[in-house]
Length: 162
Image (cartoon, rainbow, N blue to C red; front, side, top):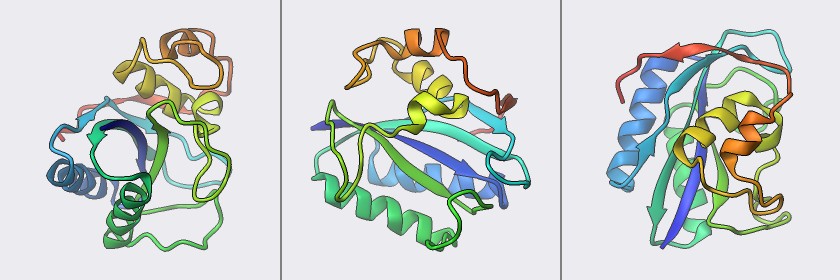
């Protein structure tokens, strides 16, 4: 079994899409645990605020199957690939970590660079796995968050029942 971490984001009908995605993740991986939900400014474009959080679960299936499931959930929520990387979206599910794997490219690059770039990824990751270590840097996520000096995008925590 592999411990997986993924980021979840939405800025279109975000309450409904985040709750629905959490419910689907819970059906697929009953062990899933969710971080606090954060309201976050749109990054890279002018748009509505996002809800962002991180989830973790243990997966029995191979990486390709997990990625396919995540894409299916996005698609079921109206996500259409091909739009600008920085744009409004109904649902974004990005695998951040797959155990301690370091992969470069096909089918995915891991760990995701966003972990070190964005507070709305690192803060909830550090909340779920404070003693977890970045597979390339070796530092704990708690330490990486304590040392984070990137531009703040998190506005506040949101009381959203998942």
